[in-house]
Image (cartoon, rainbow, N blue to C red; front, side, top):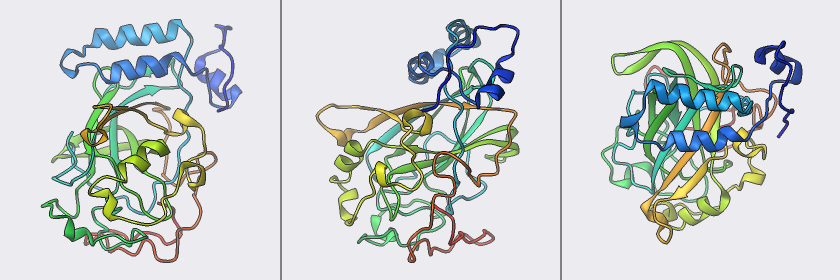
Length: 317
């Protein structure tokens, strides 16, 4: 991960310093502070807490690296609902996901009101809206999982950041599909507002993906219902998008709810260092895999909901 030393010259602004040094600042202290803030009791979160946290971070001149945007992939759908629980009854290992959005251009201060949007596949590799797409290997049909989930909305949703810049989702660990490793897609939006149950307006500041350590993912895939999907799983080292940069490239910090029983679930966290003034189109460029390469010839082939654009055969998922 490309990092620079602490900036001591107070005559140069942090935004200018970032421009000069290629868009990164020192990482370290915020990763711990962000994890603690993310798993704090939501009910006790206050503006004072956020101010104190931001002051402590600025005092130490430590900040998370500006995250590099990557491709949104072919499975994105507009109109996701604002909600904490996105499972809709989909079965899988529970995942409590807490993300902290900070302004990496301004001392890593929290970005309250930022809308974080996530979407990911189910335990067998299927996305809502594209349930006929072939996940690769051998998997039951998506309709065979017995859930009553809405085929256009499951495992998709928004949350609005609190005063600490924190959002929380209740979901399941994603499965896998060819040729990708286990991952969750996300976008960070600012400037819009909640309307009719979804998030409207504003702009996208960041498009990224979250990743899972191989040992955890592979253990989960031995459990039901994941184990009903057989085939070759792509590890992090061989993934077309993950670039090996750890947390700055989207690798989640994961903690098992029960050390001896992974089926009980995990808590996952990450601090997202973004530029709230930037606008990202989701095409991806530079680090993190950018366009991500070509998918296999048999994926994706799903039909999106009526009125949606079909996934691009050349886009990476």
